[in-house]
Length: 443
View 1 (cartoon, rainbow, N blue to C red):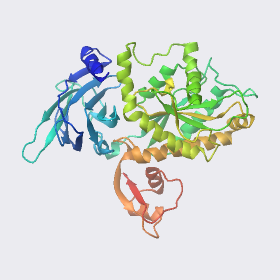
View 2 (view 1 turned 135 degrees about the vertical axis):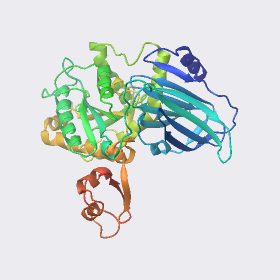
View 3 (view 1 turned 90 degrees about the vertical axis):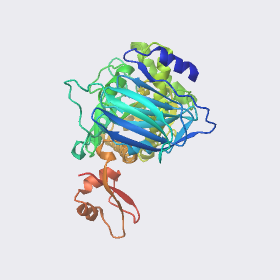
View 4 (view 1 turned 45 degrees about the vertical axis):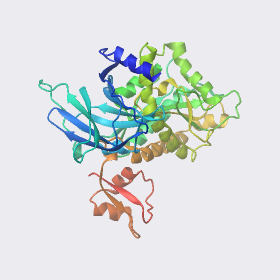
């Protein structure tokens, strides 16, 4: 299958808007996995260079994807320490870098780009004190033209992380309806607005809504809106229903393209995806099935794992607000979660078919509790895994808490605010523990 995919990628070279092959793989017969020992980046006038230090020669390939612009680097039979790519900060050409394991043994590195680039890759053998190396150059396609280039981000240019909030259903698609006539499309929009407000109150985060009023949006349009805003995360809000009114609780779902984790997840995905089957066609990418598979591979290389990680954080917080229907993040083929490079979760906030939960869903107080829980989960995730180039990823220093320390005294020492300390470390109380390590935010 992998051989067919590589042949296919060569065949579609030159097709705009889909994928273009920019390097052919080098062949090696290495018996054991190649190890990436280090990654180094250097900036030059019209290009940036990334050097992967390896313990042996590697079989690799590079291709580009458009809308949004990305470079995909595949390394055959290769492993890398988790988090190594996080050392590479955002720059004039790279917005963020992600990595993941493919086919159990291969490594995929995805570069989300600030602008369109022309990649060039080559391998170097041992020389002097240097071992095996893979060099990837990203050339500015606008070099020599009158188009101005983006400057590398400085401290004061650090951006917010963007969270796209998708209020489920809308317009001619009301979603589920409770016994008292409560409509899913109404309560999801109300919660989306409350969540937007809560997230925007937190330093370093910005929320955007896929819909702000009672309108119908195809599932593909929701994904496109998230991508338009360059979202770092997407949260789709829903309210479940079941024939038995005793069913209750909240559940969190992430994408799976290999099958649902439960029959309930499968049925729920079919129900949520049905809106586009009734009111419009779901066109998640392009018609060619092989192209779709290439695009969805990106979802499988880190994005789904990130979605599960986000889902775990949100689930931990939601259980303090409502009973949890499923204690683990479930997976199914939700169409609205199939944005290739945006970690996404779908939250079934409660069962609208349950009289007690229908009442809660209509309650402003309960909606605020749900919004607060979700925002806490989001903050916890981004305090650990914020994309490079964001305020939440940057630290001026780290401080190990000592006995007698307070947030106020630490903030004063580093000339920052208690609010910024809390935001950078996803803290929702003022309590500290000796030995705790705090990241000091960039002023």
